[in-house]
Image 1 (cartoon, rainbow, N blue to C red):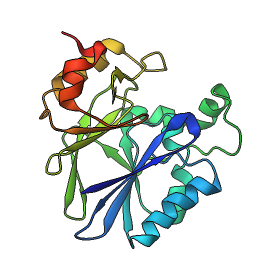
Image 2: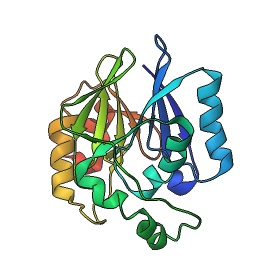
Image 3: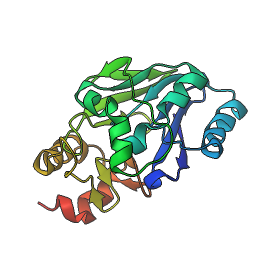
Length: 214
């Protein structure tokens, strides 16, 4: 599968469109659009490539990763997939907006399908495997495309850093343990597409990430 990256304005969130060129099916991952310009960028990309949105996936339900869910659902009519352990965050999006001083209408998120560890999400002929890696939030997941060698990491792992663990449900020890057992065991060449910032690789993070030193 191929990955299109949209770097948006709310906390520098990366929203991804992952698409299968053989079938023109796609998923929108972590919709963070907060204005018409950002919505149009996603919509125009999908229309230009004549893609069909089959899934809207949240790696977790912090506001920057899910504030665009309502628009995406209304526009494309696809189901929302997220882990059940983050459902409390989806139900409190308006409270999150107040806490982070995000203005405008904010709708809570309804999960249509609960993601589980090891589950495979089929996007046309492509497959994303669900890896549950809590610690940044209780329901944080990483999406692994083994065939094409990449992960969509949400706020679990960044270039040179890891997710913060000081928000509700966070646990740094749990986060580091999950990264080491589930992500650093992937091939070194695996590309890491994070929720914020630039892409990296598993091999690079093994060698240089100060949070993951043995």
